[in-house]
Length: 354
Ligand code: IPM
Ligand code: MG
Image 1 (cartoon, protein in one colour):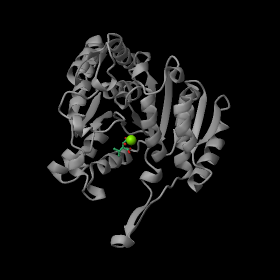
Image 2 (cartoon, rainbow, N blue to C red):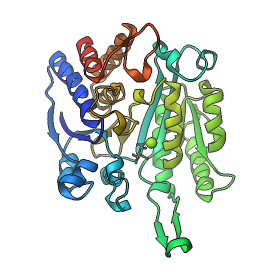
Image 3 (tube, rainbow, N blue to C red):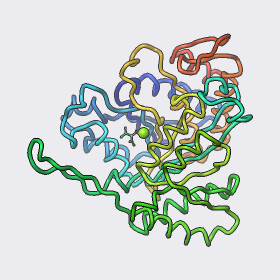
């Protein structure tokens, strides 16, 4: 399997290093070969090449089987104009790879119940919500502009969706629901936004093809509230790009920490893009404090969706669970009586269990 590696900025390089330990373990166990090509994106690419997403990076990613990304961004590049920000590189990569379906599973390991900010009675004996975020359209990619000078400036962003864009993400969500608890919640703001009214119409139409799936529609403000009030009501959530960005961070706290949430971004033919949901956390970069589990779980998703290696994916997920069983925790999920370890040690322990 040919993997393009983008360590990126902040904690990116140190978490990617742990992912590689896990891939080495899988390689030994299953006798498969992974080849890596490391490329630049984000702040480090700006520093070294002047742009956040160099042509070369795109070329390498496109001819790989999968792209594994750490994180991008940091204060150092925060004041650059929009088109030169690290985040613009990430959005450009998602768009160029055509990875419109962003799968963000929020799974609560029972061992981490106490690390969640929610009460035990709300979480029950575990939780498994799949947020399916549309990733290459909507508010992030509609026309944006700033006009005027000083206090008379105006700026706008546009939330725009075509039927085709809504339909393809909806189908991905229904297919996932069919393999899970057959329950789909479509989140929109159809009481206010025209794009949401179209969204709702298309979801309703596609639903006819999946009579076994129970569908409900929820306004995004209500969904934000329901996720905290009664997260167990959700199985698969499908939503617009920006709504999904917000709701997936919220869903991550159900699992104890943003450091636990992996993601897979899939398109029609191009390689999938795999990255933790969290950012580059510059405040703890280089201190051996970052939780590598979100990235390691993203590796599991990569082997499952781009490598067709379901067994290896399960091995990784089980290894994470075992290491948690043994009481090892990084700082973000630390609880009294547990053993606190750093990034390196956590990676080593998980690889060891494989
Ligand atoms: C995410 C991140 C990105 C996004 C940023 C870094 C551009 O928040 O992957 O959720 O908004 O998509
Ligand atoms: Mg986000």
